[in-house]
Length: 140
Image (cartoon, rainbow, N blue to C red):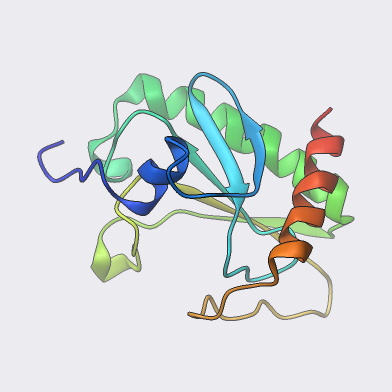
């Protein structure tokens, strides 16, 4: 974990230094809305333990993380009434990783509706808060 930066964006969200629209939290994982969503309900699931990406993660952390990814995916699909769920995970810049803290993208997919680009344009915070509430409700 020599290359892990404990001051990355997601680590700051985990510590509460930067706000995030949380949908789920437990002792191991935090899930929150992506501020540049590719579709309505795009959620990020991150481990609280520091890992740069999947390549350096502790296997026990990964096991707990993927269980939560499944739970969040089920909740997102139900809350957003999605036709499917796309799970994305990037490792290193060459593969598209831009925040170097292990994370999974849980992206609702709707028939006939293309995904938006993951651009530098942030979504409306009110809409993100509303979607986060729907997902929290679906998760119980």
